[in-house]
Image 1 (cartoon, rainbow, N blue to C red):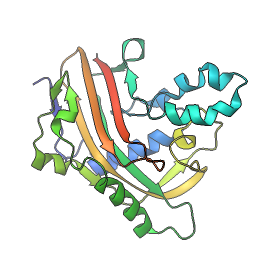
Image 2: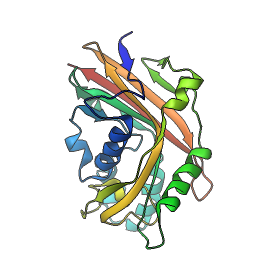
Image 3: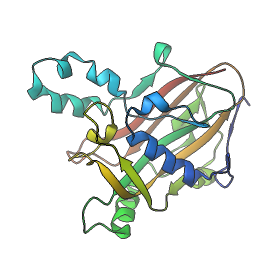
Image 4: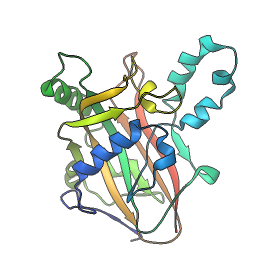
Length: 234
């Protein structure tokens, strides 16, 4: 097989799945995350690129009244990173596939660890839990994880401090994944979801796809974490 899925009970580079999941959330909310996705683990995401969003004529034109709805519709689109947008990695880097994720940050005085855990567990209960291995594919082939082992890829992090940067719109996903937006600051956070840490063992281009249903949006629309990547290994 041309890849290995690291066992959820094992360490990679001295860190557990829990550790890498927390690093994923820290990366996701950082400023300009796509510009520094180059550590020992490279992160995939289902959210479309902010660069594409802010190069749109709607967000750069004068019709500002249309922007909120445009952003809302844009952020539920699949994240397609192929061709010129493909991901380039080295053979000693692993890939983290976040098939479906949720998190909650304690931004109110009344929020406590139980509040955070309740939100994350409620999101998990209303998602594909577990997803089928046919929903996560490498080169069009379902990942070799059966239902029993699939549940081992589900995790809930211990509480950690999430730094949310104070940057202008278009540089962090903090402004687009919550209503209201996640405010700048350092917030006690719990994250969860299904994560797959993968080592790609051949120097070639892989195709990685994932489509997993999550908890519905507040307005009743279905939510899918949907990604398609070409990953070139050098």
